[in-house]
Image 1 (cartoon, one colour):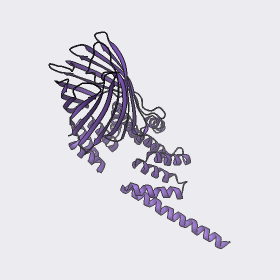
Image 2 (cartoon, rainbow, N blue to C red; image 1 turned 90 degrees about the vertical axis):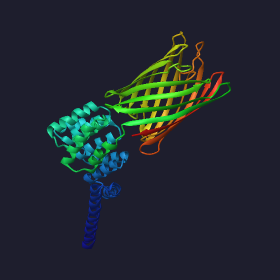
Image 3 (cartoon, rainbow, N blue to C red; image 1 turned 135 degrees about the horizontal axis):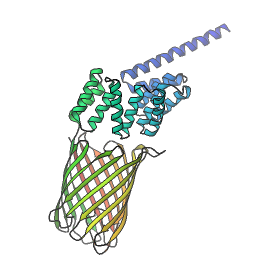
Image 4 (tube, rainbow, N blue to C red; image 1 turned 30 degrees about the vertical axis):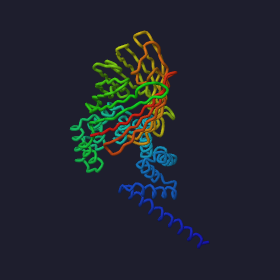
Length: 437
């Protein structure tokens, strides 16, 4: 009996030693930035000692850093099931929910933590970050500034406020904040932000060409070439664009200027217009205005939902045209977006027509996007072919892809097929190249 007891004690002690070694090695790997190794070791540690609350916290944190967000949420949840009031686990869960873009869930947890720990700067910093991530930059700025009034050397607040200034293209202000953060603590992450200010793209050049060919109808092929220059101005996108196109054996040259950006935390606006001197088939001039209002951040399995309100006036030689567009853009999980619009065409001759346009987009990573959609309107969705006698229905299917070639360059390809009732079928192809600098 004594021998069995001694063997049992020896086995328990060996397991504890083994667990302790794996756990400590995992913490060391985490601290050294070897996150893949840390996740493996801490996963083994939690499997060997599932009652260890601290191990679940560190394991969930590393999984979050690796962007394995669902696994991180589950790991932190296991820890919370053992210690529901643990501060670090609760804050870690809110952080992971924010990384998953569940801002409503993150805010709900942070509000409770803030009520229990009103003077805790970690909670205050996390609330500031979430406000910025969900697009409320004014709230984020207010919260960061309040933190810095309490502690002018709070490195996370200095860095977060610097990020807001960098996004607004206020480079000097961002540089000053990053430098203040580095004076508090030398951080490779903050240093990368500071170095990135020198190379952050503020301008872009787009160029490309489009072409259309026809079947089931006698019509010359269409083509156009275009170029545009864009720049960030006080956080807004401003651009100048020119396009030369040929249709029906005639050529037009159109010039366009535009401006778009955030008006309020949940409201974005875009305004642009253009002129075509001596227009043959294009509008003599046009103006377009649109608003995007974020109605909600999160609604169960739905992410952000945006209401779209748009209007366009185009003045052609044969008629004026007012196009009203009302739509909805719904972001879903895993980088999917659904977009649908109702269109109303009203000619000053008294003619009117309705249409619709919808597409689905998938953006698995930054600047890589696939699109597939369809629409039904009057000839055509480009609104540059008019018949003042009657509205000619058309049906269009289209697809496109945007692919980054390098950090600075990307290419875009678009294809569409338009079937105009009882008249013809048009196939269109567009190729574009973008350079950021």
